[in-house]
Image (cartoon, rainbow, N blue to C red):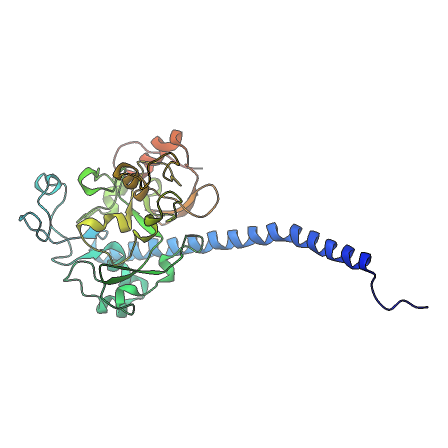
Length: 316
């Protein structure tokens, strides 16, 4: 008699073979997806680098990391502090508006309409609506490998879309009271490409890098970002430093919740969801994947972050 169906044993063998094939294919598929995400991230940074160069070509300077109005009255528009009184933070180059470097780049990113909708006369340009201009999700500002459980967040009644990319503020960007002010960007900065070229060189200096906003020890870091946050306390949302290595996370033996010492280091850390490093666009517009993830790498990482320390370093 001719058999017209599989036996149970044959069916189990077929299922086992299919499961083995899926197991073999899955890592390859994941690698392809990871490579595509890393390439998309690199392209995003390339576009931001081009926008920076276009801005500099028009203004003859780079945008400030954060443009903040100045007031000598403590607690007013700008707090009275040692950085201001010592001259480390100067007058706002863009006048009396509140704007992050990402907000100022919008016209150079073909986002003129969105730029015109932002009310930069008030600090933190969000509004009590998920449809506010500041809540507009911009894919150019998001790495596909970043941790993005939400793309917009509400804070104190204002809505903001998040970002994956942070400007280079030198060694320490946050907290402002402890910042080193030795990077390319800072509050009310006015760096020029000529300055960088005449010192360590544009090909040896970070412009913008990634920050991976997931930390198992401190989930709140996920919300500490927003391309339209603009105030004295918003440096944590759009500028990073190199006080810790790439991909630093809060140590597992830190208290819960971690104290400000750990929080400040985490908020200043470049990093990514890619394997073994993070993408950076350098001041010459080139995008490179940097793998300086160890404590021993910090001297090299910090040389790349400081545009005028006289210590030139080249990556392979």
